[in-house]
Image (cartoon, rainbow, N blue to C red):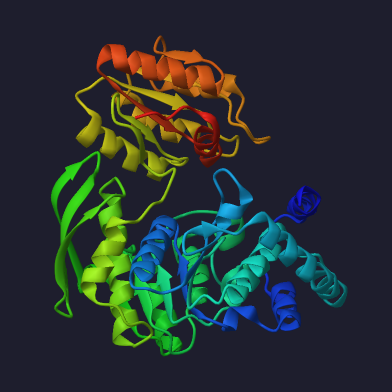
Length: 432
């Protein structure tokens, strides 16, 4: 199996290719596994992973056999492809690779280009879901939407959680361009659900939906989610929809941004039921919400002292993290174990969280794209953390931060990279 995975990882050298020709040809050769089940297709700058996790949990609570395809993974590749919460097994993965390899080679011969890592992985997911006889697959877009490898699906609902300035080298120079790429997942007559979008982005999405004859539902207009009480165990919320559904539940995903994501997920479920794509009573939806898990995103690792693991790695996510620290960790002293990849905005990130930090442990990210520590230290000094910052390897830094929090009555956040989050989940003691 390891040899096959090594071969798969080598496809990373093909980089990112925006286009569907190779993927469409491979799907033809495979007999279109993506047509064997209902699909919910989810894109967005932020929130798409959380919405996918919420949907998967609600559908599973309703008794459906559910496939979930997300990226990236935190600890093991297998996490990207799940059926009813279980990652694809090594033996099944080996069988999938063995079956798809010759077809992928044929697609390469016919299209005159190799498939990328993400394209091949998407094919693995589609075929695994078919073999496992899933009834519904929740598919997260990798990049953009219009030319993403996942966009060969014909979904029951297309979802755009948010639109922000990201990956401009691939998606265009401005917000309307990014919105146009994400709106590329909208198919003829397929209902569309959106989260809160900027007016410019919404105008573009509306234009595409109208052109495609696709009914458009804005989650903020269709669903009201009101916060009742918030703690480190989650948010107690009340829910009311325009179709008359009401209820209360505990949302275990931390952060007030997750309330917006929940509204999107509830709106999607409402559409699925209204269009008879699924059959599920609202009380079952709420049970699914309470059972949801989405590791590495404001995840509570320990109660005493509080330790929060968050894969936040851009300024927008830093704002969300800073808001969380203010509301739920302060007035305790707060320390952060922090590392970042070299292509990220370290100054923008630290500028938003530094005023809330009493200590900072700078650690290397376990990836070849690790940002040099000196560059992180420079940004920390510029953010006003001079004298509060030390450097160390991850494991000793984590242990030292937890010990500091215990003695100071404080709390710890680990943030800056999903690679860092994965390393913590893989190997650091997380005793309660």
